[in-house]
Length: 311
Ligand SMILES: C[S@@+](CC[C@H](N)C(=O)[O-])C[C@H]1O[C@@H](n2cnc3c(N)ncnc32)[C@H](O)[C@@H]1O
Image 1 (cartoon, rainbow, N blue to C red):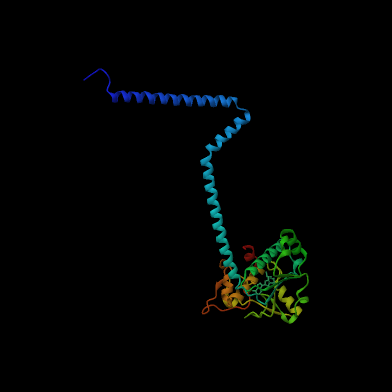
Image 2: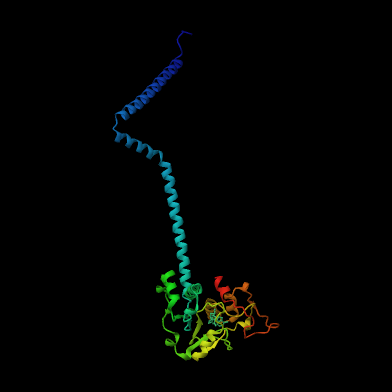
């Protein structure tokens, strides 16, 4: 049966081979032509058109990068929304807590009439202590009616120079007048470590005075003397009853202020002292069975500036 002719199928295969080869080379030629055309086109293009083409190419090449950036932006926005939400919740918790705030009617005065007795470096320390009192009072559960009296001189100058914002302070009465011009004499109680009287409780109808003084104990007894001269009541904090200390019980202005705030909240002197006084300064609880309470200061050293400086 062999006629020397290839079988049909073989012929068909060869034909399709030829066809596909032909098609392929036609395609290749077309592609070449289109590239050449493009090259020709590019050559024929104006500078502006070439630029536009380049930009288009770049735009397409950077598609993935843009996608990635969009993803990152979305994530960033999500995180921002989350943290905003968290801080709103925190803020509303704080607001809720602030609704527990019940201001006390107790007036607490810092008497700034000792300005001329201080060197500038001590005035600056007093300024810091006052800033601390202000901040603590704003945070307190039972904030006091806060007064600065006889405000002027070096202290006012320093406040103007270093903390102009004081003029906008809220819930504070800053007066140039002496406390005796602002409060009835019978309502005044001068707090002074030299008083023989011990403060057992606070009377919220009274105005307690703290001497606005950083004196490294150079003016011993000055506030006690002043209270006596002016014929106003005086009292020392009951430190000796609850606290055993390495040094005299002369505290810094801000510590006396903070102890009063803590007492108004806890109604317990011992707790108030130990919340405020740093233990490293030698303040230890008095052992009620073995230690003898003292109402008078025993050692010569004061802890007023050690404590205030460390704040
Ligand atoms: C650094 S002290 C000034 C000491 C000053 N040599 C004096 O005679 O008052 C600052 C103020 O805090 C108050 N203070 C300090 N320790 C006190 C205490 N143990 N009891 C009552 N008040 C105290 C007083 O009002 C005092 O004037």
